[in-house]
Length: 308
Image (tube, rainbow, N blue to C red):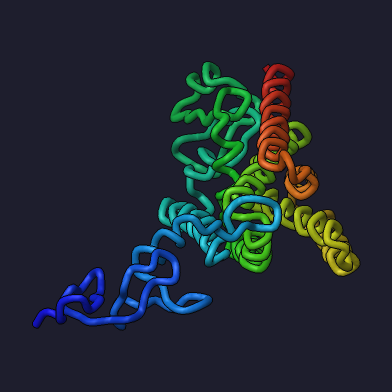
């Protein structure tokens, strides 16, 4: 039934009489179309328009504040677990996959019939080809630059991945909430890369290094910088770092190079993010992080030249 002539009707429902108007555009709206506003009601069209024009919440140092700051951390944890499962499925401690994705400064020649045996004196693929059942695994110096990245997602021992994922779970969401998703992801990846480059420079040529510890120590360095920036108490963080430093040099087969490189990389990247001037924040952050990556690439190339 249509409303009487001359009586205002809802702009979306012409058969409904109404005397309420949108506070923004003054179109008549029925109870089904009324949307609560700060004063009175608004129509659905104005609510949608307002949502588009409303500025999204910003993270403290730029970027959009995410609704759930755990998402990126869960994705990173999932990647680490996925690689670990692949290592388990291909032989665990005897998996040759490890030697494809771990960081090898120089290549290795393995006895293809016995994965536990390799020949340190055979330092080139040409020499390895002369060994019966010889299998050559290239290192970073041979062009396997992907190992700088894949090694930060690779683990073998359960305690290793367990400890790294626990710290990532504890620190990651806090930093993503403060830095925003893109900056947090950049922090994690650049920290891991810095740890890998430090390993490439200062570890033995015949070593094999893997684990997310470089990136994890980068998060520790980041937390230290953020807390210092806001004037918080850094004593607890310094104590935690001290304990981890002692453990690094106490337990065997722990890469202090990866830990140190990751910590320094994380601290530098975070300092660039949090101390960038507000007026040119995004540009300074992008330029600063890019320079760090360029410096790490240059250091990698320089090390490869030395090992050539």
